[in-house]
Length: 497
Image 1 (spheres, rainbow, N blue to C red):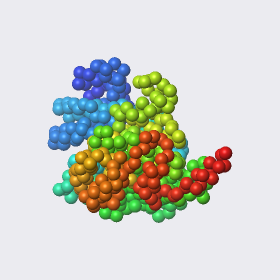
Image 2 (cartoon, rainbow, N blue to C red; image 1 turned 60 degrees about the vertical axis):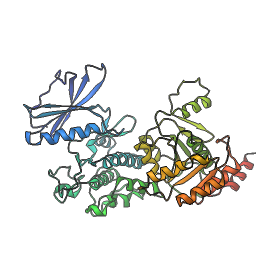
Image 3 (cartoon, rainbow, N blue to C red; image 1 turned 180 degrees about the horizontal axis):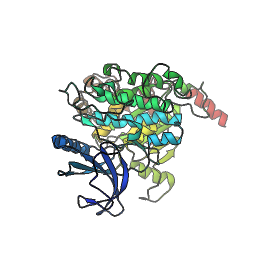
Image 4 (cartoon, helix red, strand yellow; image 1 turned 135 degrees about the vertical axis):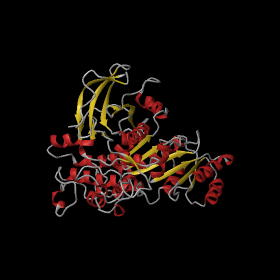
């Protein structure tokens, strides 16, 4: 229980707007209440009440401003902040998240969480940690544990308590305050050094070990391997072990690095029903991400993304094409044609299928993380021509980034300009595609960029259908990535006849 008496009770109004309805929970440092919004009837908020002495009030205020600036689908929005100087109480008003804590969920299932949910769960947490750690300055969560993770009815994970989060200060050797939950906090949170992004990764390792042992262990001790559930993907063991190293320099150094490790894992992609393990399409494993970014509007990014997706589906099956911008209209129009609905009549489902490719319209980054835990061989991201932080990060993180620029002679320099503007990022795995360009234009751009992977794309009027010239170019672009299954496809077609 919170040691100090609360200033709030049923019916109390703060900020002339939020009326307290009931208590949601309490701890040693704070209480959380449900409040109704007097200006927005029916809207409910969570109000967190904490007590801060005068000496730390400035720090609390700074932290509140930091939290209000955050925006991520796996974080509750902090929408308001109030102080009550006479009592030392401070109030954060945030989204009310419906659901139960991960701890309560684990108890309800006797410590069991379905094994197919563990990797997607890890990716969801890594996504929000990556967001926090790449802020300027980085935000360190410092208290990742089952009671601070809310599981919504849609099986989405939300971090709910930023009580001890802090901005990383590079000039400090140690944290001013040592806080964290025993069993989930990194060693440096107890005086061995300053917490940074690697401290949160240690906590993620503790959380994953907790899930993999049915809630019995969160620290790597002798014999713990014997308590890890046998049906779990075995590649998780070395990942968890590295996350739980005592010394930060021995752990993964960033959330992005862990995401990459999970994506590369041979066991990450579960076998699909009806596909033999001897199938040539099983020669590679894991979900591969292809990100298609247009240099400018009208450069052909969506057309190219569709052509690439259907090419990959014909070669390897199990492809998702994701429209990664919430205001785009192209996939909505396509869905109307596929489903035969009237113009402007949007379907309740954001997923539809065309010739074996699953289209996901107007999705968010959180949706992509969720899809990575599914059964897709390839996820193709249509990023359009936008270069906001979210889409640019997905482009840079992809296994196969494709830049699409105009093939017109006078527009080729647009691609060179993009490459220069992002020269601080590694570009060795980038691929450049020039729709309708001549082979000479592609050759000149290869020379200017000093980059071999520049492809002139031929005229391809119907990106949903195979085209011999386009397939030859894409065979070259994806050489070594997927097996040549054209002979097998021919046999399959003969069998169908």
